[in-house]
Image (cartoon, rainbow, N blue to C red):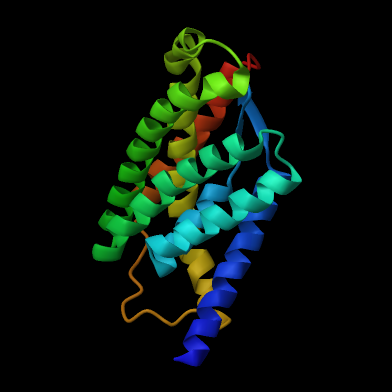
Length: 214
């Protein structure tokens, strides 16, 4: 039992480090002050492996470190980061916890995306006026043309990448004995994988359109 706890803590610490590196090295401006960071992919994978509480811990720790290192938005940015990551990864992990198959993973990622988009619309409405120092009426004007499409793109992109790399990542961790081998590993659906690739390509093209590149 003691060894299991040490392995779990080690895995969570490793996920925090990888998630932070992903956030630090990949920060793509999309629209206004909104940037895409792939850290939620790592957090979702952690949630799939160890449950929604692990996803929450990684979200909180990485958000806290980000606030003190690279963020210029202080506590407001921290709150928004944790809300965004948790609403996506924790919801996805919670559904996958009770349906550990491909359909459960897809259902969890879709539900996580819908939850994240809804949560961020509400909290951007509440908090963004404080961050931008503008009237709430000005933020309302940004919800549909900017904040909504950004979070939809973010959710789809995170979901597709998570689906594609989850099995390879888990396989690598099992080989290092950090997590236990599954009784039934299952197979990745070729059809879902193709859809995930199409989603990624579509999201990338959409970002280029939003930035006026194409």
